[in-house]
Image 1 (cartoon, rainbow, N blue to C red):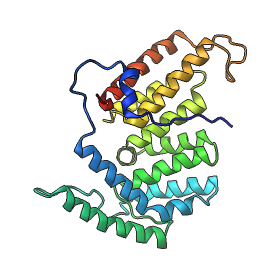
Image 2: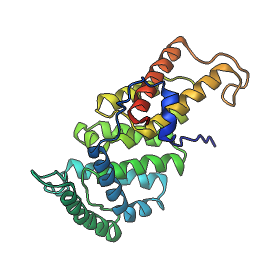
Image 3: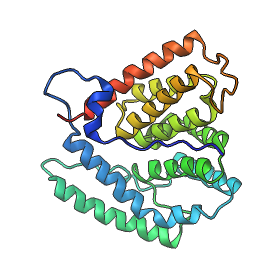
Image 4: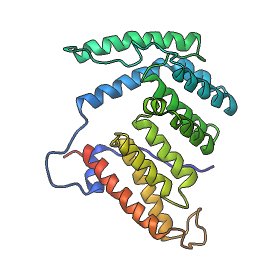
Length: 260
């Protein structure tokens, strides 16, 4: 079984690897980004009843669950008032988090009592979707199933827009590299373009993934590996261009999080 590490680098190591400019004004994670991350983490924790239940399912049962989940969204099977938790005018972050805690309690109760019918919100759907992608890859080692589910989501643009967050694109970058990237960087580059076009700039995990991909690419390019035992050329001129583009994206992502 193919195993690769996509562990995150420490922020202090980013400046050397990304060759960042000498400017001292290095962007840091904004308060809004931190708040969003906390909201996503709280929602994912509230869904443990459902995700633990899903962990016991077969590959076909898992796919059926997600097909049903998509249909529920298309059929408006959710509370429109709480689906998107918006910050009210003059509301503090603390007050918003209190409302989220109350909603997460509802999500958690439903997840424990009826795990097959989780409460749908704009944070719950991505959490469930990302769990499915990870499960198809880590439990079943089935990149095709993960890709099938991702493409099914794209059949409905409203669904696709809700399902995908930064973590989704990170997972799909790993899927494309692990299962399809050893012969071409085409799909990897397309996923980065898709991510950016949908408004996601990348995070520390994106940085770690792109760094690993490029390190592996250059290792295979220079000599014999398990994927290239004879050391014969397997990369095209187009892949060289794609690697350069991915390298630039790596620098851009790293510069956002580098520390002085």
